[in-house]
Length: 186
Image (cartoon, rainbow, N blue to C red; front, side):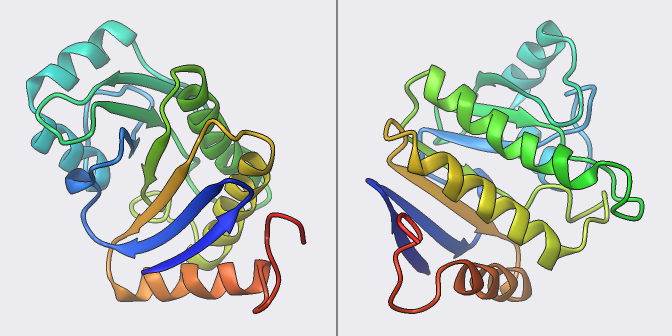
């Protein structure tokens, strides 16, 4: 696990299962229907149970780059923030802005609900094909920028699937906060 301070918040990178996190909220990398799917989305719906699907049916979908919230069902997390990342085409169709929006809008929703700890997966890097190194830089830059001005969020944890994804995020964080500097000020 790697951990850095961003203002008053802690940013963590861990390898693990997003559905087993004890943060107040976990983020689901959902599709626009919010009705379940593969990857993280399928895992969240399976682990959380039918209550999440019922709430998502009432929400009625979510546009790419935005976020919606439901209860956590059977998960340890009380809340699930559903966000839709972009399908990667070639990086020239607004994908970076949409991906940043997915992270920013998830954090904004958490702040509005007074949720102090959030766990994110690596959004759009599975079935949606976003290159992990580029997605990691966008995710970390967006989260760091948000945390600098939003002290209501005390912990953001990136829960990465497999050692390769963890190493990629660690390298990106290292580029954004060279040894000895504080990403909160630098």
